Amino acid sequence: MAGESPGMVERTDEGAEEAVEAARGETSPLTNRPAPSAARTVARRLKMPKVWAPLVLLLAVLLGTVQLLRPLPDPEFVVAGDGTYTFTGDAFAMPWPGEGQAAAEVVGVGSLGTYGERKPVPTASVAKVMTAYVILKGHPLKDGQEGDRITIDATAAKEAGAQEESRVEVSEGQSYTLFQMLQMLLIPSGNNIARQLARWDAGSEGAFVKKMNAAARELGMDDTTYTDPSGLEASTVSTAVDQVELAREVMQDDVLRKIVRTPNADVPGLPGRIYNNNDDLLVGNPGGLGIKTGSSGPAGGALMWAAKRTIEGKERLIIGATMAQRQAGSTDANAHLKVVKERSYRMIEAVQDALAPATLVRKGDVVGHVDDGLGGRTPVVATRDLRAVGWGGLKAELELTDGGKGVPREAKAGTEVGALAVGTGPGRAQVPVALQRDMAAPGAGAELTRLG
Image (cartoon, rainbow, N blue to C red; front, side, top):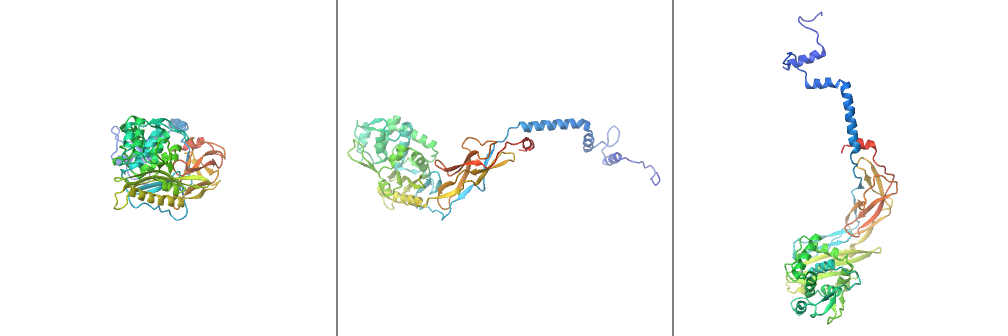
């Protein structure tokens, strides 16, 4: 062609690409021509739809089938907002004892906090609460029942004369009902009665102690060790936090709850009326529910306590434990006992005064939604006002729960699908929740396009 240099020939686009590849030294060993690049090879193959189109279609069908056959994710509740409610008013400040350790909670509401180092300390007679708990696990009573009759053995009768420990004056051969024995155990705090019950239940005190420690493990009392059924031994140790765990269980038992709140009682066969070391709380505070005192040189003063306050017709249970309290400069166990009771009573009264009701959610409020896991969200609303009890500054956690029934994948508007709850443990407040609008199961489109 005119203007072309000698020896020049016209190149196609493909020839130009081969020239560039040749310049890079990429040649075919047979033709001495540049070898086609990998990218070029792929590009050429993609230009052959008659070969690839059926394969791509088959792959799409297979992938779609897999997506459709995959199990659907379980629908889940999601609480609206940050899922909390903060009670108004001045922040509550517990009047903690200033020494030793303490813990408290309002059952169904939550913990009031803890005080002091969480380390095992001697329990003294507070250990008898576990003794009673284990006895009733193996020999349950209903309110009003007396239970088996238990005969006093020679050991219990001999120990009735011990001057260095609390005991009940019983004689060999006498028999008392199980309910009466529990009264003698918990009201005047009879050490000899604790050991008699242990032998009656397990055959020996050692075997019974093993049952006490097993029960402690079941309740999550990991910092507790029992070495005797009465608490006289300083090696029987626990923490305030652990004793609150036990108090919560004990106060659910009608028989134990009845006994521990008794200021005094007459038991036929005993020389006189038995009195509770905690009777000043039980008589002086209408909401006092007792539980158990303990005092000794190694333990100082200890008290597992319970009280109530009735709000809007419902009894609110307050429980706690105060341990290792001492009267400065004294070696008198009764002086230590006086101190622990005074300090515990201040805490009880402060909590009773601080408790107040509030409306956390109004009927019809959107409290969250059901998430189907594939992008679908259906609002849920409270079916009535959620009322709860708390104290100033308490940040209560709200939870949507299905009650173990599972959240449905589809349902009509107005269907109750769960509950909105607040608080912890038995007795927490809750109201049903319902769908605000119809909830449909995920469609094929959502199933096909899901990535997770």
